[in-house]
Structures are given as C-alpha cells and as structure tokens.
Length: 201
Image (cartoon, rainbow, N blue to C red; front, side, top):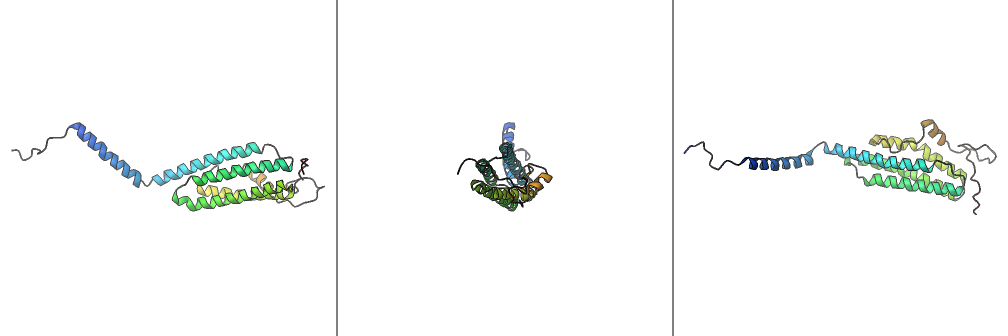
C-alpha cells in the first residue's frame, strides 16, 4: 500500500465549499461580537437618529411660532404645545439607548433639556395667570440657556439637537430679561407688552 495515499475518500468539492461557508459564518459571527468598530457604528446611528428626532421637533417649533400670540390664552395654548413637543423630543432621545461611553454626556444633555422644559412650563403657568412679565422672563431664560444646551449637544456630536432657530445676535436679544414694568413704555424684549384682553375672566 502506498503510505502517502489518503486513508479516507477525498471529499467532494461541494463538501469543501459547504464546510468553508460554515467556518466563514462562525468567523463572521465572532467578528461581529468582537469587532472594535461596532461601537463606532452604534455611535453614528445614535447621533443620526437623534438628529432626525430633533430636526422634526425644530420644524414643528417653527411652524407653531409663525405668529406671535396676541392674548394670554393663545400664548398659553402655544406654549403648552411647545412643552409637549420638547418633552416628546427629550423622551425619544432618551429611548435611543446610545453607546455606554456616551451615557454621561447624554445624561448631561438631557438634564439641560429638562431645565429648558421647566422654563417653558413656567412660561405656560404665567400665560395661564395672564402675567405677561413672568411669561417674558421665562422666555428670556429659555433663550439665555440655549447656547449652553447647544454646547452640550455638540459635545455629544449632534448637529441638529438644540441648534438655535435664530442667529446669535437675535438669541442674545431674546435672552435679555425684562426690566421695565411701566405699562406706558414702548414694548420691547426688556419691556414685554401686556397680553390684550381675551374676553375671559
């Protein structure tokens, strides 16, 4: 007998191919589990989905604020809708469950968003109380904290989230706290006009 002859029949070509596919499948599965780029992919997906959520919220904010509210009732209605949009936006981002290495930054950003929502809620309460001064003060505080929220968003890598809807000069103007309470003074950001009577008690 030939000592170099195989002791088992040579596998057919199809068997080798099938075996090779099986081994390749196992290797791919292991690569996906151990792939160091997997985290980066999760990060990019998280940021993209977050920006998409924020872009939709920005569009809704812009559409709602095309007209300035003329009465306390319309201001309350508008602000209530803005609060709902902001809360939904925050909750959807929180539900994305981004990569573990972003958890601290995400928490900081969401905390900044919560502060902004709290100020919107104060504005809503003021409008419901027909208090134009408190309403304007709350709006100014929302604007004043906008750049801080934007920085927190940019540290994460967001491009759309907390992006101001106006330029920096206008944002700084909106952030001015109301100073003058004289009802005869010309209305400005620092001297907000009173709400016209809505005809309701």
